[in-house]
Amino acid sequence: MAAKISIFSGSATAYLSEQIAQSYGAELGKVSVVKFADGEFQPSFEENIRGTDVFLIQSTFPPSDNLFELLMMIDAARRASAKTIVAVIPYFGYARQDRKDKPRVSIASKLVANLLSAAGVNRIIALDLHADQIQGFFDVPVDHLFASSVFIPYLKSLHLPELTFASPDTGGTRRAGSYAKYFHTNFVICYKHRSKPNEVAKMRLVGDVKGKDVIILDDICDTGGTICKAAEIIMEQGAASVRAMVTHPLLSGNAVQNIENSALLEMIVCDTIPIRVASPKIKVLSTADLFAEVIRRLKRRESISSLFKF
Image (cartoon, rainbow, N blue to C red; front, side, top):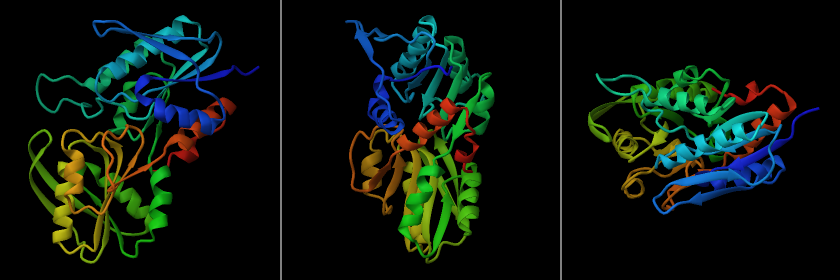
């Protein structure tokens, strides 16, 4: 007899969790979070989960309380005798710290993987990890989904006559190449040099964009500096239009203002992180159906490989 499925949400991702549960055809489980005067908090499940397959939905964007709340929920589910515990992490925070790029720094994404495993997680579902190798930081199965499942239908609806893709840095060439191959078109690369984190000192464009409708691809938009600079250079080189397509809209500081003042026609993002400030230039696409389908297939013990486009 198959175990019962229960879907719960952390505080940071309740807006998305409700949509996922609705798409799946279930109600969100009851969770309460008691907060103490000093800022400490205690999440607890308000229903029986013994022998249940528990799905915990929480993005781990700042503040770090979001990550710690997920860890505590995993620990609570394990101590409540859940059969399996699956962490659904639409945005996996600290993923940019996936290697030692200079001496005496932490590999924070590996540390987060260790914490999740120590808490008792049995499986991870994540969308567009910043680096593919993060999957190897876990000793439990990782279902690494790609936002292309959400972005491709929207791109097709635009009917752009001269579609071309662009990577805002050399690290994103694989992503740009995959989209270009799918749409049978070309891609260009923006070569950038940073003087310090979140600040681009120099950028050059490699490739021809004259008369093209360009889509800049990236997994994260933090301050928007890189993408806005890339859009400016692309338009200077004669592009017909330029848009950005980003999975995780962190949009820190003046990011929204930077986007509104940029050459971008629009920025297309997923709802893995809540948009703090609305903008007519920011188009939000839902990932709820994608995550619900993964949960549905796991429940039925069906393959989910067809969902791994790119």
